[in-house]
Amino acid sequence: MQPGVFISLEGGEGVGKSTQARLLVAAIEAAGRRVLLTREPGGSAGGEAIRALLMQGDVGRWSARAETLLFAAARADHVERVIRPALATGTVVICDRFIDSTRAYQGAQGMDDAAILALHAFGSEGLMPDRTLLLHLAGHTGMARAKARDGGIADRFGARDTDFHRAVAAQFERMAAADPDRFRSIEASGTPEAVHQRVLSAITDLLDRPGELAP
Ligand code: TMP
Image (cartoon, rainbow, N blue to C red; front, side, top):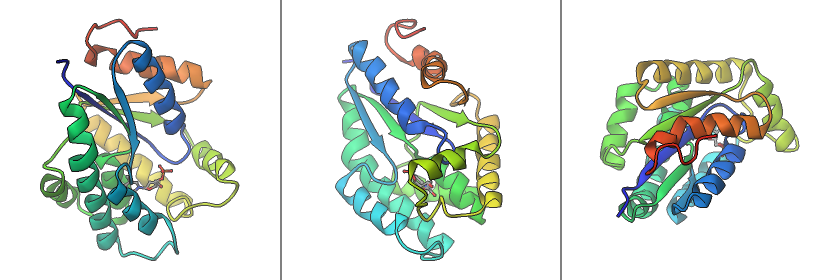
């Protein structure tokens, strides 16, 4: 059996992760591999129930510590019930956000990176993606796009200020620089198709026949 492959997509609000995830799924399916598209927070029944707690309500509904624990709990359920079983059957798993979102968003609220990783070690037995694609869009175009997409209704995270989103972006850039084996930074400007070609080039080595997905 082919080994499973775990790919996460990361980045700030509205950089086009979900569009790119869908295009990537279609390309991998067309190449004859079984694919699972999933997301965080969510992706399992328990994860989605926790997502509702996390996304609704006032910005200050949860303390940063409680919020970090809720993300870790949602992830633990998702990993055990959905991601690991899929990887065990050789599926390519594409996850729209994963552990690095906690490190960036909760890290930007002062949560210690080592503590977040320790929670991940316990909750999800430390599962890490084989490759993490960090979609990068300069400036704050991304937030504007997310707001337009949501019809102006921002969720608890979209509702935070520019400084917060700048801190999140800085956290992502730091993680990518510290772990070049796992991360690939993808320039997210241009047409969805142009970005898709960059995404394909960044994962093609992980699939069975290197080059089969190359543009
Ligand atoms: P999204 O579904 O639009 O990506 O929204 C999820 C929001 O939750 C987004 O603002 C990022 C935030 N988030 C965290 O703060 N920590 C996490 O661990 C994850 C997965 C998401």
